[in-house]
Image 1 (cartoon, rainbow, N blue to C red):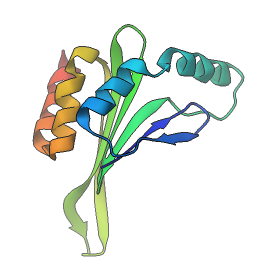
Image 2: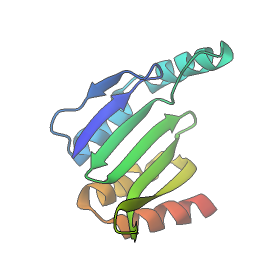
Image 3: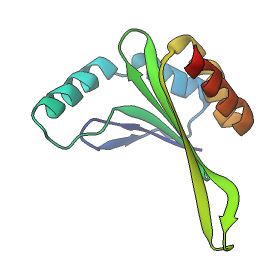
Length: 130
């Protein structure tokens, strides 16, 4: 598993030897409010920017957790789909879930670390409908 913090200006801060608890601690302790403010300033000034996030990559599976205000986070999950086109080209699938309550972080991140793709996707889909 690889992990990093992505700042609003595209810079990355690697997380050495990430574990579930360490990632949950980072989501609590990092200055996301400051990064969101910088992101909003860049947006208003039409400068290049990206949403601040914690990125978690395991092989072809990527989960991004983008904290927002109000005890919520956006999630973006991408993985290679088992379908192969002409046996050469892989197809990928993405799922975005918006404004999910932070009380669900532990379960979602734990599913990703455990390689429980179906559970993660199912949980994100259920939480999106709420």
